[in-house]
Image (cartoon, rainbow, N blue to C red):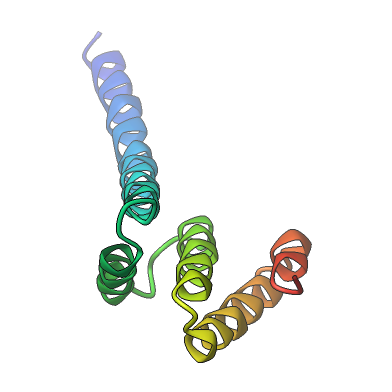
Length: 111
């Protein structure tokens, strides 16, 4: 009986550890969406917040989060007529997509 309890506890602990990155990723995606929604009222403030978020995202940020972040940042930069910044973001997204072998991401940056 004691061994089965440890086995179950181990499974539960493993599932909890697996869920932490998923929850963190969802929180980051929700934050990106909230900032992008702000752009409907104040594009300048949204772009500032998006850039601040970019400073917080590190090398361990999952690719889907980076892809969503850069895709929306590009749109905000284009809406603000910051073409040079948008080009730099496009180049970064293209490089990440190629590294990840993400054909959809690569195609998106060729608009």
